[in-house]
Structures are given as structure tokens and as C-alpha cells.
Image (cartoon, rainbow, N blue to C red):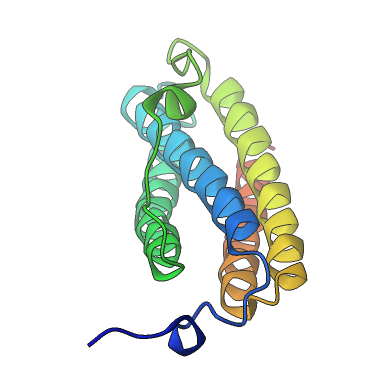
Length: 156
């Protein structure tokens, strides 16, 4: 059975391409932060070891699951969910020789950037009349804002 365009779930979304592009960027950024958080989790040392080790594990676990949700939303919009490895690495690895405090500041910056990116995705989705993606992005912005707060509080 095939569905006509008017019967698909994306029929009322005015600009699927812009939403998918923004979701794809968010997917790459999420994976980038999962990898960096995991590397810091493995390599943190010093007096903040346990706090950073546990916090990064909580955060990368949530973000890994979120990456699946983001990818599935892209698929639900009828497009392939693909990540360009060069976008994920951005040509540089996380500096695991940093102190715990430097790692916290680095992760804080990334979470703030991703929260901002998710808030922009809310606007893109709302402009395209896609409340499902707007809700997903709102949830992710909330997570990244909370993660930033926790990192800021841990760093002191």
C-alpha cells in the first residue's frame, strides 16, 4: 500500500528540507559532544575525578539516546539520517591532557552552544509548522541548559 503525499505525516510541514538540515546539524553536534564527553570521562584526573567521571557518563548516555531520537525524526520526515564523520570530528580530538576544570569549561561551552542550536531548531521547526520537531528540540535545549548548569556548578 502506498500513501499519497497528502496522506503522509509530513504533508503539513511547509519546509521539510530546512527542518531536516537543522536536525542533521544537531545530530552531528550531538555525536561530537558524546564523543568528547566520553573521552573526558575516560581521562579525567585530579580532585574532581569522581564528580566529572559520573557527570560525563550521565550526560553522554543521555545524548547517545537522544542521537537516536533525532535520527529517527529525520527518518520520519522521509530523509536519510546520515552523519559525515568529518563534521563529527571537526578535524580535532578532545584535549584529554587538560585539567578537570578545563574539561568542565570546554564541555560547558559545547553544551551552551548546543542549547542555542536547539533553540534555533525550535524556531526553524515552528516556521515550518512542525510541532513535533519543535517539541523534540525544546526537550534537547532543556537538557543542554541543565547540563551546562551542572557543569558550571561542578566547576565552582
